[in-house]
Amino acid sequence: MLAINTKADWQLHIQGGAAGWTMRLVALEEPGVTIGCGTLSPLKLRFAGTEASNQIVLQFSSTGQVAPAGVLEVARERMAIPAMFRQEEGKQLGPLHPDDLSHQK
Image 1 (cartoon, one colour):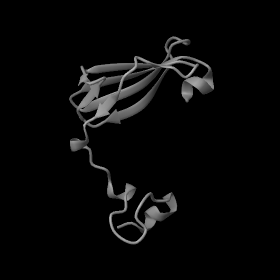
Image 2 (cartoon, helix red, strand yellow):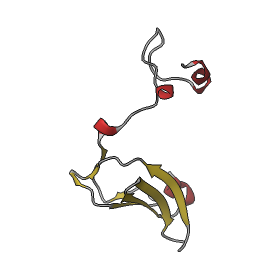
Image 3 (cartoon, one colour):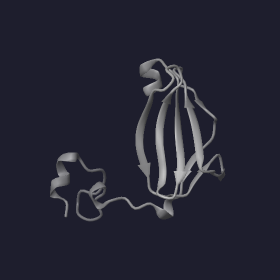
Image 4 (cartoon, helix red, strand yellow):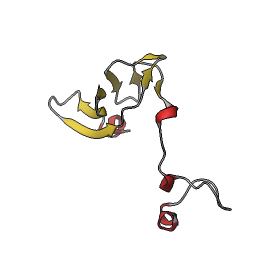
């Protein structure tokens, strides 16, 4: 959406390290412009069905195209979703509204 809304091409750089994966957006039409996007914990990532190296680069064009084509997979066995984002018991199972989060244990 950023590429489409800014009418500019961007790359997402995902760099692996001991502490996890660092993500940043790089503007292709304005050299030196980057946006830090935070980090992922040290999860196992795969791209296009092969084991990912320590760097993955995806390009998002202003036309809506994404390259290279493929699938970015995050290994589920290592992911833990905090309890505040799910409701496991009760009558109102399913997605939570942000106003309901204060009522969670």
